[in-house]
Amino acid sequence: MIRLLLLLLGTLGAERPGQRVPAWYRADGRDGGPDRGTGYPGPDGSVGTDGWPGGPEALPPWRDPAGAIGRSGGGWGGRGPRRRRIPLGLKWAAALVVIGLIFRRAIAAVVLMALSFLVLSAGEFHPFAPSLGLARLPLFSPFEMANPDEATVIATVQRASYAGEFRDTFGARVFEDQALAFKGVLMALETYQQSPEEFYPYSSKYDAWLRHQATLTSEESRGLAAFNDPAKGNCARCHPSAMREGAFPQFTDYGYVGIGAPRNARIPANADRRYYDLGLCGPLRTDFRGKPEYCGLFRTPSLRNVAVRRVFFHNGALHRLSDVVRFYAERDSQPQKWYPRAANGAAQKFDDLPAVYQGNVDRIAPFDRHTGDPPPLSERDVADIVAFLNTLTDGYRPEPSNR
Ligand code: HEC
Image 1 (cartoon, protein in one colour):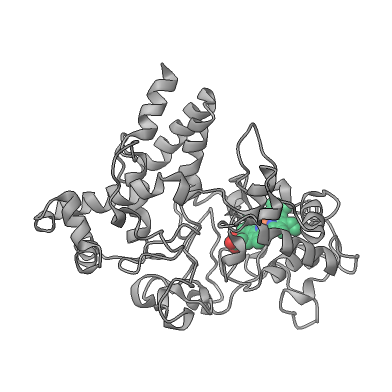
Image 2 (image 1 turned 180 degrees about the vertical axis):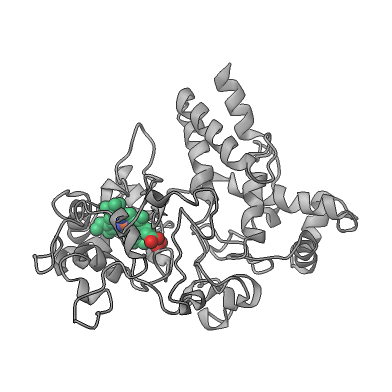
């Protein structure tokens, strides 16, 4: 009974077998790029500049390929609050529910459902269409598309190449009824986000390897080993890489942790030395204000498709994947390479956190070294791990010889 109920909940609003899904429903995800009309994130979690006409140079400011202020200037024309980069796509949150359903772990699914209900009920959320609430978040978030209101979103869709298909689906006069048109937009996004083959295809080389349909190169397998090895990267401690109970790994444990990313001076709000983005405890989030133990903690992101991202960490402090991996190797053994020096020449570790909160930063391997110690990862380990992370990009086409 529970299972049936869950399945029903999970499928409501989703594509049903035999139901024709109009092409425009999927227009934003087709080419791995964003929706050119509304700027909605592509299936890679909102990166992918390749599909954009004119290449990265022609990107609108909110795509910010140079990563000057993180991934995003925030909103149309980069006029947003300029304090954060765009957060990870919402697909993995949605995937949690779907995974629970697919693997019919009824109890896990109930817990996940309950959690999703709790989280989403804070926003505008319809219980029978789990992602309608989720689907609207990036449209209005000041760090993402920053549309001022629903009318702006609808006007954009009305001008888009797929406006005709939108009318075919929702009625010739749909644009005359703002509430209906906006519901149509959300339904379309929801349908897209619930199409596993497009939204969470698990089509990376690593997934193929897990299915025994691909072979990792020796560099990639050394990288995987170093990634998992508690004495080396120990990355899987927070970014689990193994299948669990038949589910493909998400490369995040969904936990919050402080790793002490260096301050990004190019974030406009950071011009004020007294301004700190403390993550879980604010100032952008307000529900954990006054809980000092949460200050400096950020969500561990998924590493799926990480190789196509161009800026890393919540504040966009780093721009190369190899530097991110090297940061893990050297944060404690060679902090002077990552943090500015104080007047006395010592590295000012964790310069993006007030001293009172620096105790919240993680100190377990690979973060267990002292200044001058040998780093836990050699340069070769770093290169190997980067090669491995490159196997997490969706869209791998197995060579005939790999089959
Ligand atoms: C203690 C938990 C923890 C461990 C161990 C850990 N990570 Fe992370 N990782 C995080 C958190 C938290 C973030 C986000 C930090 C932020 O936004 O400031 C992150 C971010 C990243 C990112 C940037 C992703 C993005 O889109 O910005 C990469 C790449 C990454 N980790 C790779 C690794 C690798 C490789 C290792 C092993 C060498 C590793 N991580 C070990 C918690 C961890």
